[in-house]
Length: 196
Ligand code: GTP
Ligand code: MG
Image (cartoon, rainbow, N blue to C red; front, top):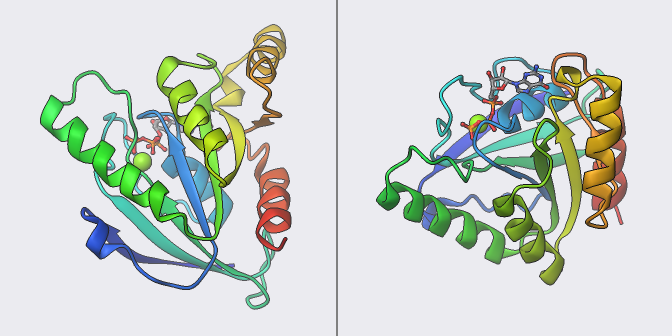
């Protein structure tokens, strides 16, 4: 698999027109979007992972090529879009609004592809997640719900969170960037969805 950074957009005018199906990664600040993207691409340092919530302030675009999970290139290409996280209280209001405007513009563009809605498995649905889910349900965009940081939960908590996520009509993919759980399943979902 080959992965390369395309550009970082802070304004809708800068969104690249790659002609490729786009996979958007959406979720609260610190939920693990960049880590998941790196795990999928099989490259640790592709998207910047940070311990400071709210670090990704632009939409970062990456070109991904090759057989999902495999070593060979060719046969498959898509574009990953790492969106800014939402819902982090310590960010100034003005910044929050500009992030929101950027994410809205991106989603309204409705490029071919799908979205990945990441939910922290330790918290389950939060209000801001549900708002985004409602938006996705009302749009034509296909999406998959992912329960991140699954490695941090014990058996009982795992059972609970899956029940909570399913309660909103989603079939979540349990995911851990630490153990790699869910990588193969997610690639399977992505390649099936975008080749439809
Ligand atoms: P923003 O870009 O700030 O919105 O954050 P993000 O959603 O991209 O999260 P990021 O991938 O930067 O991860 C945030 C923190 O969670 C980092 O400290 C990661 O190491 C940690 N983290 C991410 N995924 C996992 C996971 O699957 N398991 C565990 N244990 N930690 C994780
Ligand atoms: Mg990030």
